[in-house]
Amino acid sequence: MKHALIVYDTTFGNTKLLAEEIAAGIQDAGEITCVIKHHKKLNGCDIRRFDAFLFGSPIHAAMATRGIKSVIKKAAKAGLDGKIMSTFDTHMGHEGRGVRNMEKLLTKVAPDSRLISPGFSAAVDGFRGPLSGVEIPKAREFGNTLGKEILG
Image (cartoon, rainbow, N blue to C red; front, top):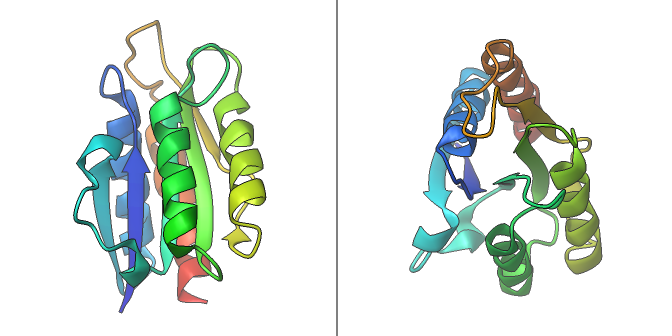
């Protein structure tokens, strides 16, 4: 059994919903347990037991949030070498900017991890959302593809 940790930040709940859909797709791929955590609720979580990590953020000022970037740096210090990584974001324009921002940071702080790129960028309809209707099946498909990578 493989284990994946999905860490997200969210403002209006859209990135959390995206995390849940991606997790469902990962679990559809086979024997993978997904744990989904808001970045502020990671205390006491032993990240070393996970085989894969996904980091998700809404785009704020065309970047991933400070909270998720801080978690990426802390996770790298705890040890991400050899682990599978990927990213996802929600946007209302600036498609993929958060994904690229997180990928750049992961490449810098965890160069010996296995980054699955590009990550997934999902549009929201309006400032508060909801997720655009086409994004839910795409998120599950992204998760399923990632799950197959995790299983090797």
